[in-house]
Image: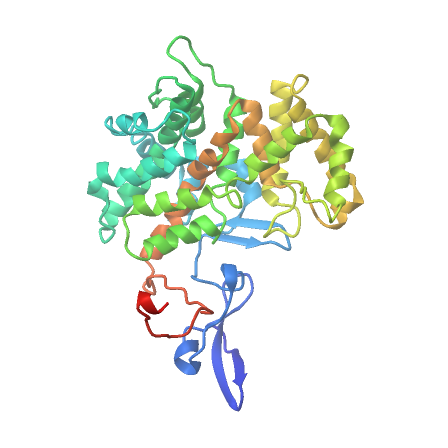
Length: 429
């Protein structure tokens, strides 16, 4: 809170509202008493100018291209940390000691198996079902299998539910993938790290040994880290709104998964890769660049620019180098999609049209390239995003549950329908 106030004048009446300050970032006007004082609401479609909560988890400065997890810059965490360490940081607020990290890692590892009866859920889906449809259903169904951790008033149950979701999401995601390609489920292995375990569950088969390449495993770990949280975006706000009704944590995370499935949110990396495939070959890039510059052409370059970042997406800087390492390892000579991606990136970073408008390649552009090179179908991209974001959703949910100011979400509206009118019998209409 600051000593500043904001004044609102309506006719001959004047009202004052306190101005609040966070540790960093813009001040906010506290309008909680607006309706009581004036009888008016604010109108803010998309909540683009509204702070619905206060949080100590993630901070974004879009103009500077800055992303902080608990105060730590994302590039430092990407370079020095691991996803499991980032999970601990997001959940508990501080980086762990060596002993704390080992204990947390063991705890997560010991919870990676899912209830055996959950296997039958998958068999109820069509083989061609989208993996995100399966994820939404199975995550929501976890409350039916782990009802000993659904009492949100019990801190211990909240903690158990949190660990279970972080641990089991890779298993659930890998099972969705295996089911979609008609291969047998692969159980988790406690001797592997988080990213390697996920890769093993996705790509190993009983007939032969699967060797995990450390470069690929590190790339997966970075993708998880860079997508772990992103402040009050649509899916996170969905989790918070669901949780505000005291819904169980599994239902809240399932709601987040469903929201993330929207192509305007979690499907951006899939859209970017589909665009690269639409372009098809390097010699067609000039044609599509021209179309992107044409205001009358509906074609848009996907994977460039960002709604929040008005500068270079800090996550993209990390992903750019990782993409180069993965492509160097796997090669792009026989992959025209990846060849298009490399050339399009080069042009976008040099062409004044893109540079002046700050339409830099974003994290979705690079993560889609990496996941495609590793061998994941585009239908799995958003699933991996959901798996990565689970810890952020849980951290935000736990923060909200512990907030003494928590209230059930109840947005207002500007009604523009018919005013009150009398019912007419059907014979008089």
